[in-house]
Image (cartoon, rainbow, N blue to C red; front, side, top):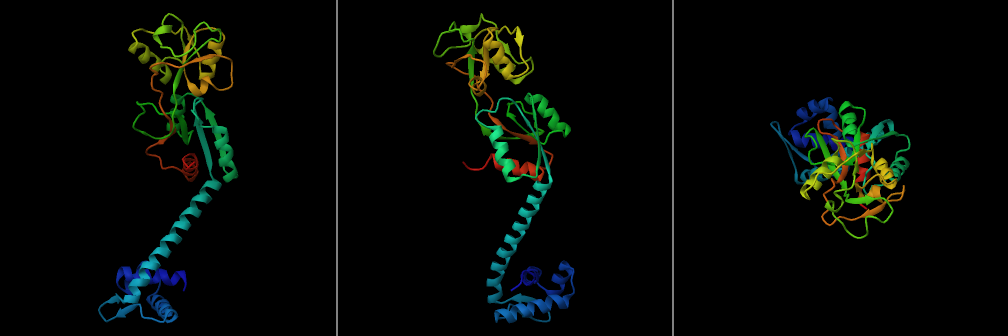
Length: 291
């Protein structure tokens, strides 16, 4: 039994005739008829009832049709998988990532992905999520890893990967005390934050307003690492993602908040109207694999 015979058989059964099957398959009708006869001879049974008006399946033909379609579907799926793998191996992938990724270990994930697709050319770019989204829109970046803010424009499609939380960091001098705290307890201290317009700055402003004050932000940093460095140097206190506050870096005191503002989840973001390349699909599957 050959794959070609099953293909011809399925087409005749689906279209109800040898002529229509031959037309769709773009081969001569005698070739279709010959392959069906060979298949019937090999199986030792008649698959079609042939009349001058129509062709219908026998009971044996109906049984075979179920199996034939399952086999053809598996073959089609295998071909699609191989085509996608070839696209990944020949492709390129540009990943934009924010400094704050929660529990997502980007270097480890990249290493594992590279071991699976060693020929894929991968580039990474780090920045704040707004700048990375601009790069995504311009086509310079294929996919972004970063916080999924509630005001993410509709043009982007996001998939949640891991959570993140916010803490308060203070200089490591013990002046801020220990245990849980509130933002209002530090209302008279200078705050260090990202520039105005950033997601973290908006979160700080709203959270402080909920506690009845407007934070004074005399010091701005370009990224979370810069915020931590300034706080460690005694320049103020800061609201910061827990993953950034507890990572390797200058020493700071980490205080949990009694009513911490919500940090956006960390996820994968791509353009909604841009079909993902095989490399993007493979990266997405890698990040969302079980376990």
